[in-house]
Image (cartoon, rainbow, N blue to C red; front, side, top):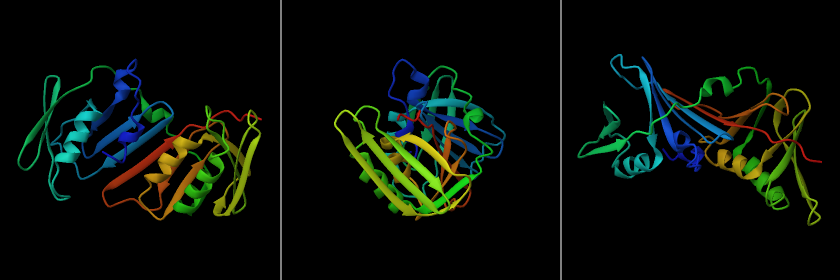
Length: 235
């Protein structure tokens, strides 16, 4: 839950986005969280729903309670649904949660399938460079700009109101077109923090298209995907 709960919206005017989507498929379970700027999807192929197909939205507070109640990594969660409630059966307890009503956005169409500009780099190194330049980003927009060229990543930020500017470069593995794209630094730092591997893979499209932030390798029986929408380049 910690790996996707950070992307849940805090906007009570869109209550369906304040929860996590549980999408039960024939041979997998998708967990999805989004606030409209970020999206995280975890696909678990160990799920066995005995043919049950459907989806529900669970409040993130209930999921945090479930996460705190699990006593070991080997504990098996069993789900049960009745009307507008979902039950989590743990080894020694059962936790019930009311479901959030409403239609979850059709998120699949937002996930790009053809981002062909691919960066691979040490996750910690990329995170450090983002933090370095973010100190000079505008306090409201938090915008930083990434410049990509052959095996080179440039991060920069500036705030014209206070006259601050920062620029740093990093050697990376990059295969794709030269590209300049802007993101909210806070959102990008959060995604990088949750990459579970030493290297991060980021797949870019164009400067106005969502980027995919991925682990170098997925865990067995799991597909972990994070998405970040760019912001308009401010010059």
